Length: 162
Image (cartoon, rainbow, N blue to C red; front, side, top):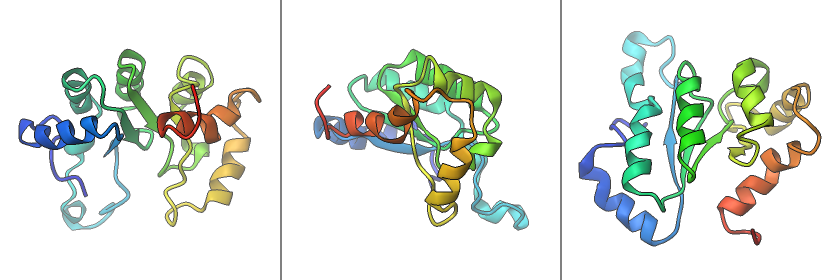
C-alpha cells in the first residue's frame, strides 16, 4: 500500500541493493482505487503517490530503473516530465482503462515516450482483454503499439538485446 514517501532517505539502503542487483523498482503513483469511497479513504494517503517524489530517487540512483505504476492521475503531467527528464524512469499504464487516459498521456506515449511506456492491466482490477480492447481504440501508431505492449518491458527487464 506504499505508505511512505519514495524519497525518504531511510529507504535508500534498499535502493542501493536493488540498483546493485540491476533490478527495477516500481512505485505506485497517482490516485488509488484502494480505499476509494471508503471512510477516510481506507487509510490510504494519496500524497505518497505523487510522481515528483520519485524525481529525487532518480537523481540519487541514476542506474536504478524505476517504473511509475499507473498513469499518475491527477499528476500525469508531472509523471510525464519526470519520465522525459530521467533516462531510467518508465511509466506503466496499469490500473486504468485506456479510455480514461488523458490526451496528453496518449500523445506522449505515441511520440516522445514511445520507448518508456509499458503495458499493464492491473489484473484482477482490469482484465487484460478489456484493457487491450480499450487500448486498440487509442490514436497510437501501429509501429508504437508493440513497443508499449511488449518490447519496452522486454528491454527494461533484460529479456532481449538492445
